[in-house]
Figure 1 (cartoon, helix red, strand yellow):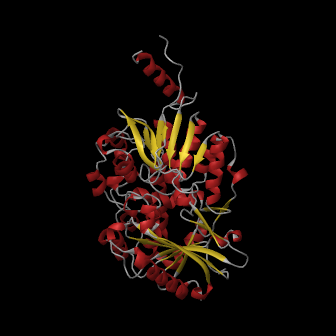
Figure 2 (cartoon, helix red, strand yellow):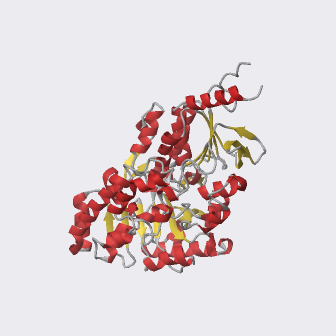
Length: 518
């Protein structure tokens, strides 16, 4: 008896890949799989794509829900090339300068930029004795970048031997040090240390615990700049969806996944909340990695990522975000502002270790209308104020605390950066830690998944090629290399090395059919 012609799980001529979640990692994975010849279906729980990069439109204002800092644009350009297009044809990226305006609690300002001479002048004004130390720290950051990003950021860590192979390089780069310890080797001034070490917070890490590998962010920003997509970060999401659809593939919204189906030791597809089963040759989860294993992969098929291991892991902080629009413009406020509170180490200890909601806070203030006025009605401004807070282990009842906390933030901004704010706000909305868990399926409401400490990096993170099931792959913040836009886009690059070519899958299906009983 002749075996049947090779087909995919759905009976078509091309193997089928299902991608769970339409965050940047999932959309990038879909483009890459589509370029390799897979038929791809992206499944999104929400009513629109983007995941953490969802877009809220309210009263004429446009709010990017999450990612607002775009670095390493070459990773986006590569996706457009894979789809036969140019990024510049679909998205208008504009450089932002300064990258960030830093404001200390005593009113001291520091414009952090990619201009070498301007940075030397800023450092000399703030900490004249640290100019040479700053330059040496930047050189150390470049060395870490050359290894941590260029060599390791897009390669899989499937085996402990992969980790052993790079261990000498990591030791040479002193990756056992924390970001703060590494900066302190070169910098004496405490304010300058703060400026050069807060970056891990952008990927969910505490600078006092995060491995110094993340010092590479300093050089990454210097080399490629900080950019903003006109129309908001959501314009990148739209562009990626167009690429996927242009490849003949599909993005389905309002399609929450209940579980990953399994045949033997292989992921065979997904079952939706509706009960619909979608078969697949390859399943890629862009959902939170802890959520994927705890809620989507049946416990009987988990040997490493058991409930106990998931519960004992360390998770990033969560976020409180207040989105608001004002009836006037605040033209003196930069696109990105970091407003430090009165405490640094102590506040981070409250957030990450003690897991208590402190009375004080530090803020990231995003004013996209500084670059793109179209994101607000004429004469108005769009903002969001982001405060790092403990994840849900804190026990904070955000249903009663949210408005109180918002008002504290409003008063702080009114006293420092946005005069008369209370009377200028015309629209408002909130994102709290429970929203990360309930809306975005983030375990414990952690905004960035696993905390990026050394013992949860590279091979120690959930692998891009699942350790639990054949045919299951992970992308996004909770897998290697980690959170942040460059990290999640790089996680999709790893798939090129671990997901088999479609032809290989077709041959596997044919071989299985040939030996199956008649």
